[in-house]
Amino acid sequence: MHYATRAGAGRALAKSLSHLRGSDPMVLGLPRGGVPVAYEVAQALRAPLDVILVRKLGVPWQPELAMGAIGEGEAEVLNDDVIHRGGVTRQALESVRTKERQELARRADALRGGRARTPLTGRTVVLVDDGMATGATAAVACQVARAAGAARIVVAIPVASPEAVSRLRVTADEVVCPFTPVNLGGVGGAYVDFHQLDDREVTELLARTGESQA
Image: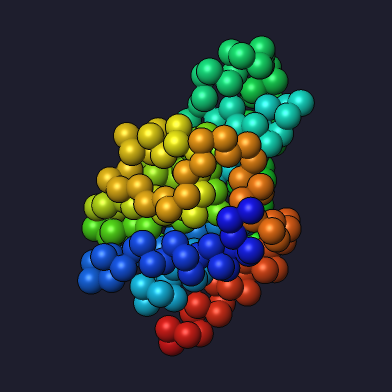
């Protein structure tokens, strides 16, 4: 284990992001697990916090394994190696894609409550998740942020596989990750407490950020 909680991981991660304080950054957490990490980063950088909505496309019989990911605005990244190795058919991929598009729309409504997406034009955007195994989800988040006009994209994660970090360096302007074990396995293995968050925990953190900056 490397981190006790996501909040602790966020505080540790923030120490590696102090160089961004003068850049007026916008912190975006990937729901749900990335938001507690992003909250601590936003507090340390005294930056606004919002969510960036993407959904992993999990292999049907092994949902934790990402064969790709989708994001708002029809953004999509596919991990062809996983699809081919797993023998995932086009029909199976489309079924998962449809289901996750529906969940993406539901989460947008639940977490934003009808509020429009935060404008990112010209901003330095810090994309935060609780960890990366393949990097597919964060790659889509970069795509969504870039399409929304972000001037610079920094991907910040407490733990990731070396392969995921290499993948993101092609997509993001900067990748910050203090812990890159060679044999990561699952992201949850890097945490003592890696419980499944619900929407209420996420919306409370977003509201708390808004109150502290009011």
